[in-house]
Image 1 (cartoon, helix red, strand yellow):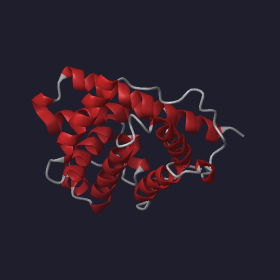
Image 2 (image 1 turned 45 degrees about the horizontal axis):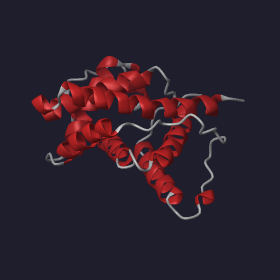
Image 3 (image 1 turned 180 degrees about the vertical axis):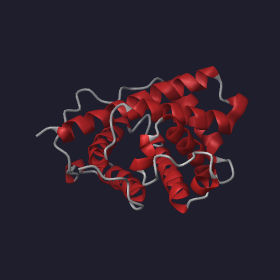
Length: 205
């Protein structure tokens, strides 16, 4: 049975990211027992090169300095996602035929809350890119397993990636260069690959 994301889910997922991160960073990482099945980490988010990481983190820091960046970036991200994937509206509790440019949607408390929390989750993940890449892999696998119950499908991830690119380009304008865009595409691909792996494991009988 599929469910849409209830209002508390993205805050809960942000909390999950922070909890897993905190637990895995302790001296005894064996304290962490993911709710999903144990997944081999032989293939994990690969080490991104220094230039890629720098482009992503430097551009994200610019975005974070914008006024109300969570709501601003999140709104563009979700609006783009809904335009490119109308079924995503239903996952987040909106009618599939709601106009993505309507004030009814864009001023909705549910919409703005989901938008802000998704950016918070992205922010938390990006803080772990680089030295904490193995910990980040565990988090992505766990988040992937949690998304299965809400009807999220693997084919939705490329669309989410496109939405992130649109949001970043809108926020940074000419500072979002081709090199920065490629770095974001590469990074999102690596992160989403592990989430998809987590989803696949969660679906196994």
